[in-house]
Image (tube, rainbow, N blue to C red; front, side):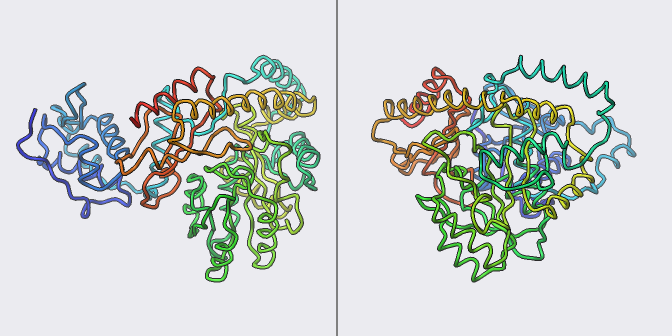
Length: 485
């Protein structure tokens, strides 16, 4: 159906700190004021996104939220309309005052709001985004179930399920210390280890412990955006450092250090996120030397150390000379599944104590049962056995995914086979060739534009193979091929 006029929207005078909240408030106000009448048709999400110069996903999320609230309705194969029966109809004047009252909570940043909406949508959708997630179908559930049952009985009988150390159980901290010492050449004590609910909590705690008054946070120009959101939420200015084919550009970092006061740098040296590049040893040593000279912390996110396929992995920054300022953050979620929220921080004891003081305020302590279960599995050798098994499976999936991209795309794309991890970074610049591309089909590929808030054209995609069987890999790559034709 043709529309006589395209409805125009102006967000500049709309209340709200983010584009999401501005658009949400604008549409709600226009409906209340009668500009958008019940039953009237709204512009499509793509059309409205182009009109406002925002991401289409922002419009889709606003439409979905207003539909849940009862302001809008979606008619299949027709479009989005203003509801015939509005939520406020029938409310008393006092109830309407409550509905229209100003919310006292402070507004989140646009990045935090987008991350939250993505997380909620992922939870409510069968198609969970995959840019290098582990395959939860490979979890040793029978072994975990037996161990959970045994540990639960023992802890209950000995009255050990009460409040405990906010740094985590001594059993798991000792087990992590042994792993870091034996497998990663790190010399630390149990007092220098803090257990957290995954690496994201470790990143957030680090941003709480560090002082924004001491300077900015440096991050790689393509980076893990939840980490950036954590730093910004705690008052830090974030400065981007260039990347090249070998990872973090040390010379650019030197320039930044001469022009800015820096409190810390956040890096993913083992497999750079998202490009998968492994930072070479000479750059690692140079980074650590700079941290001593300029007195800044190095936040090392070692999120997938266990999955390295070419020879032995390079030792982490925390094991090298001049590593006194390194805060090493790791996770066991990649080993089992994201739902098992267990990670760790390894740093000097003063930093760990400050992190534990922050935990007291938000979580009191971790999950005693899960921590003792993981400790027993680590001490018995079952964790290492499981890692060896699934490492072979993930390596085979990496190789198969690479072969499928070459078979289906030929020389239209290019990539360097990653030495580890669960994703491949693929150059698609020849396929894009000026096309307007703001999304990809399916859930297994993400454009490089997702990893930065700079206005850049897509040139690469990150394809996650870890959570896919060979059949699923072929289907996903074929779907990409059809989209680019």
